[in-house]
Image 1 (tube, rainbow, N blue to C red):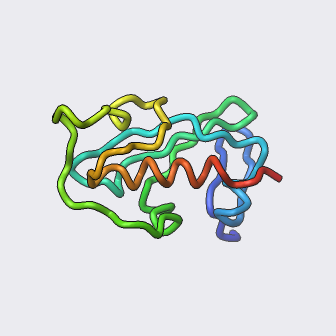
Image 2: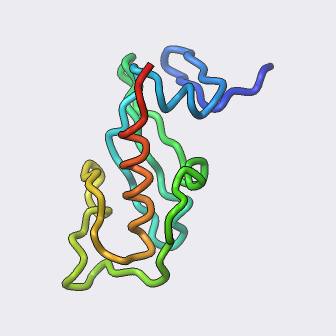
Amino acid sequence: MEYSFKSCFNCVTYWSTREEFLQDENIKLVGYQVHFEELTSAIFLFNHSCGSTLGLPVSRLTDLYQGQIFSGRANGTEECPGYCLYRSNLKSCPVQCECSYVQEIIQIINGLPKL
């Protein structure tokens, strides 16, 4: 069997590379499930045009972000807008928090051209 980056078990579509998956016009980033203890274990949620929702661990996309990753978490503080707490909130986070780089990855994914 040939290696694929991601597959949809509902319609048996395969994407051989990350770029092919992220730039597919039939794929839309719709959410993010935070995992505070292990940020790279958090999950990005994508809807596929067949009706499936596909999960992809943050660890598979972390290298898309080349900026600073802050230490220390701001969630639960007054300065935290709580974006990462709401699955469908995909806004860029303005706070210097260890979680904010994930919100930046979301912006990178949403900025990629669809083919």
